Image (cartoon, rainbow, N blue to C red; front, side, top):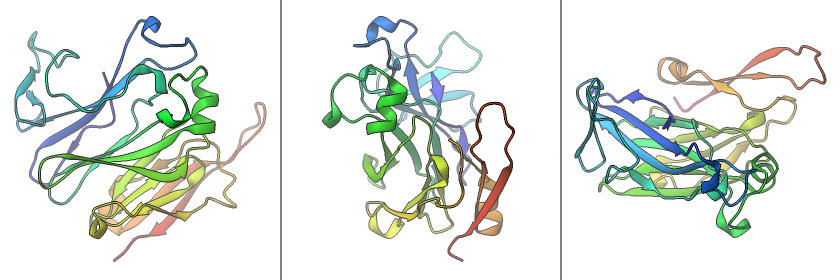
Length: 238
């Protein structure tokens, strides 16, 4: 199990999205892919002692032999087999109503049903998706219309109005409004001029404290030549 994160909401519920990774490469159609499969979700109302699926059924108890298991019912919120180079340990957040959100990314089936080189295939055809719990208790999944152009991870954050922001590799940013039900994803910033290398890091605390999206990135380099780290700040709606 690889967690996308582990976050408390305002009411004290602990949320975690995750993917499963198999230890046997034989589950894949090709040895060049990733054995990650499915996006799952659990939550805890007692600080991580007891874990429940989205329906509220207990699926694990910390410190006991009853661990959250791939065979537990009701864990998977977005099924996907191991042949699409699904990324592990991506990103998640919770909104003001305590509903969990996540970013997942993989190569969609419209580009083929078997990735053979996860770096090349994710770079060429990978897409990020926003997955969130709805007020009705179901799950909504929306493709973000920005190609990954990278094998790496995208970061998610929500502002004080629950608008969602996806920060892609190289510092590119897309956003969706809470008013649209997070369906109007659009690019906001293309990262031009940053010359950023790969994944970036966001400061989640500054979003709530300062209303600022703060992004740390490293400049591209070649060989063993060191390159600078930078921080770019973007003002969010006040």
